[in-house]
Image 1 (cartoon, helix red, strand yellow):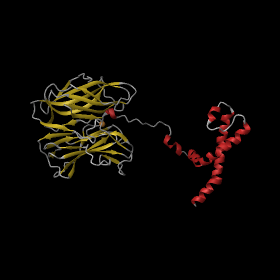
Image 2 (tube, rainbow, N blue to C red):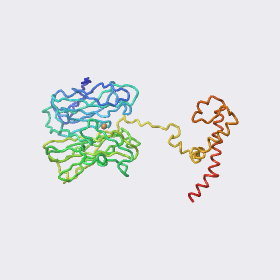
Image 3 (cartoon, rainbow, N blue to C red):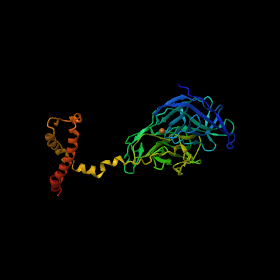
Image 4 (cartoon, rainbow, N blue to C red):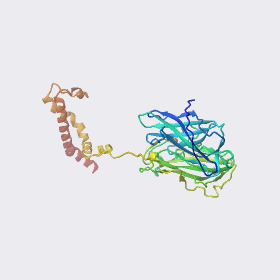
Length: 419
Ligand SMILES: [Cu+2]
């Protein structure tokens, strides 16, 4: 396995609350990204805390060696998954959601944990680049403060696949202009988006992951034939054009959100995309959940737990590149709608009927030796001077004859048909 680990461990600050929590910043890499690269990589990762303890917050980023952050339209973190002992612990995508446990909760960390970094970084330029995957951990060493353990429950609409993506086609999902996967995929008995709860406990936090075009992910719970929505994680687009770019932040559950779950409950996730404006290929819908085994919380069938979320960060400066300024040229999509072109379309049947006759009549007296209508060989005779002249004359005369035949012959017959 490739060893990319070159550490910069920065002990940035000792935070006041909770007591003795530390902020640890790690930079994984450098990862060399070739032009157009969009590959999935796995590598061992020993950039982790030096002592046992608890991780209470996780903040992902990308950085060049000089410390600057790449523009998202130049290099972007398609995804990164921090695996611990073979299971996903944290994950990040373009939206760089900050993952934090509510106060008093944390992910248990032991120095013996085996971490693997799974990443996919996309280079949208013709220039190779070296970049670091940065992650900041808020860390509480063992014994400093009592912490209740949470574990990550991985919920993905394409659960169990190595590259968990689906396509959203423009117009899919009906007239509301939204497509929800898997609900509107037409797949019967689909279960990749479902996870069965293995023990009684409490859910304490979640946030969704979407790609451009994504509107929200929904977390639902089923128990004894009843179903209830637990949380909707909406994408907040800073992008002026709306839900079309990476310039977004995801909503996470508020600090006080709790849901009591029972062994045997089924959690499921769905992802809703805008299908009115465009197709979205290789879309995702993922919703990792922080679950505390053995804890208790409100019964979601008795209490409305589905409260509004809050975004985990504001507008990122690396996302403020929307481009697309007016070029000064006409819109090529409207070319065929221009009146002269449209008029040629109206008389086009006459042009088709008359062009060969007109060309022959014009050409034969002018140059009977060189002009003959033999298939598509005109281009090979273009070096002969009279050919381009005859071509221009033929086009002009054909247009005139075709127009005359349209108005004098074709149109009256068309009117009789319609009348
Ligand atoms: Cu993704």
